Length: 210
Image 1 (cartoon, rainbow, N blue to C red):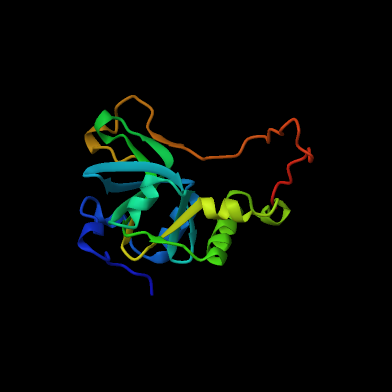
Image 2: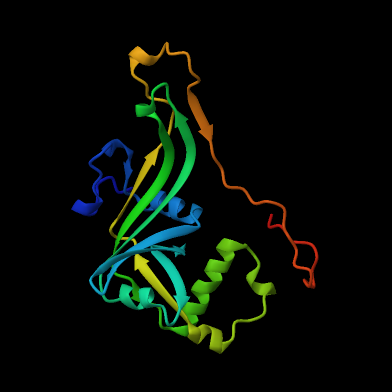
């Protein structure tokens, strides 16, 4: 049964609670659609927020980076907050006050854990590549031990997370409905452009996934 209540006080939506979603399927869909998340954490008594690529496997959100990364080292020592958002449309109202956006967002809290098993790390890296370019992993030069050792992979269990979604059209005041200006929604989508092949690429045609 889908979860309908917030898993914690800090994930409970108070502003427009009707837009809140707490079920795993909704969270997963938004996380999978986004390419970048922002990780907020404390380091040396200062708040930091860093954008980074992410991916999901099951109930975990994964990130990776260089072994020397101060952020990745700090994330296993204290709690973090991860946010991500997708903008689906610009909502253009008859008044500046009622302009808005249609969006899907996720906020997750918790402590990252280190993926230190090499087989697990390699499997999750394959999942990342499969997200970026499905069915590409098997055609790549195999990962070396040196590359694997130089890469840190962390994961965050999505047990304390919430989603907020805004859909639909303009919500103008009734008194403004006759105002002579265009009102409506401009949909936004992220689409891939034409592939740009490297001059020294041994394969000249990009194999678009089905």
